[in-house]
Image (cartoon, rainbow, N blue to C red; front, side):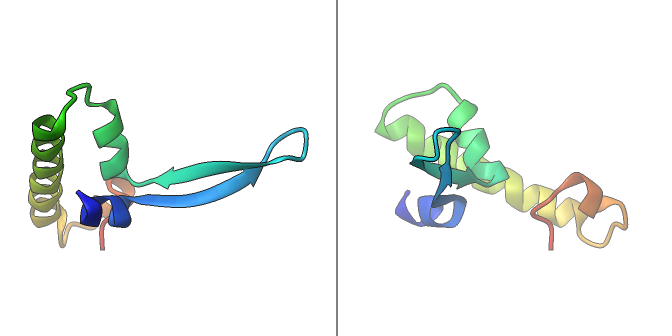
Length: 77
């Protein structure tokens, strides 16, 4: 999980309307998917990470070389 978190959650910050500094995380497509899946617990977390990684790998293999792929997948090489 630590490697997944390091690659997909970027800690940053922002200034709110009262000009106070607030913490914030930038999320990748994969980290967003992790957050919207509602399973909980250690085993569920491992399953979600494996699912997301497998899906990303399959999509990458499918879309590589297709001219229109970059419009659909922001993370594409």
